Image 1: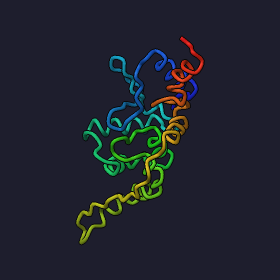
Image 2 (image 1 turned 30 degrees about the vertical axis):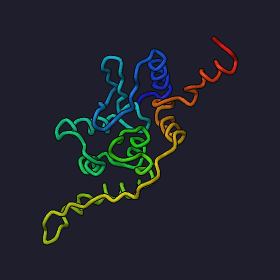
Image 3 (image 1 turned 90 degrees about the vertical axis):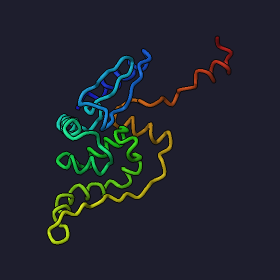
Image 4 (image 1 turned 120 degrees about the vertical axis):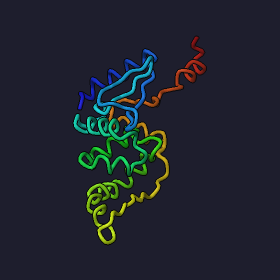
Length: 180
């Protein structure tokens, strides 16, 4: 895990210089920060509560067996690193975007943890010794509001990545006070 204060300063400096900063994602990120042209993709170590071995495991599993197709696929392929803090931090950091909404993950955290713990037992306990593929059932949650999302980001990055609460304020101030 990197120093959150230094990371927040790094992210802010990049944004000031008009670099596009993308949050970590289980199918696109690496353990460390990566850059392509003027786009910076935060790495797993950028997330508060995610350690080096977690980032390496996610990256190596993806490299060996291809992209993750669902949250369940991610869980079954990474059972050794699944715990409450890891899933919570990855969800708040947008790491599952496109697969499952982060609020749904946070609201179903216990079911996810139970599924992770019981996966191997369920897999080997199929009818007459056959393999039974258990499934993960999540209760859908309403999508998080913009401010909730920002607070989640701030919790794991100590800064805002997707947008800033003051975005758009300049135009208001300019109009209100006739600034040029």
